[in-house]
Image: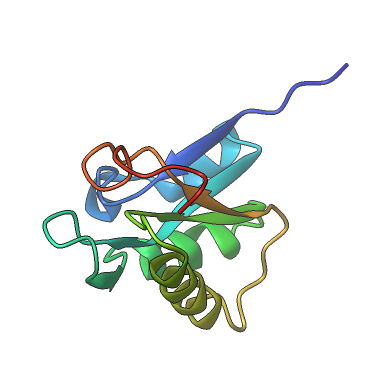
Length: 116
């Protein structure tokens, strides 16, 4: 069985501090944060400020890419709003890996349940 090494990238990995040539040699794929729902309100949707740079630099080096949305959705309507913006932002992007929804938020999602 062969293994692949990938990374998760967001603004925590500042584009200004990355040597993309070196990084592309060290990874097999990257999953980029494309956006997030604002933590304070749980409803403000934002495109990730580092996405365009990470995408352009890794794409031109032929690194296979996927994306994720950091979710704060705790209702179906909020989840649909997040998904719609995510779909809008990935238009014309080449993605070889999936689109993920990151649902680790404990402030907005903890009180919810699968029955909501």
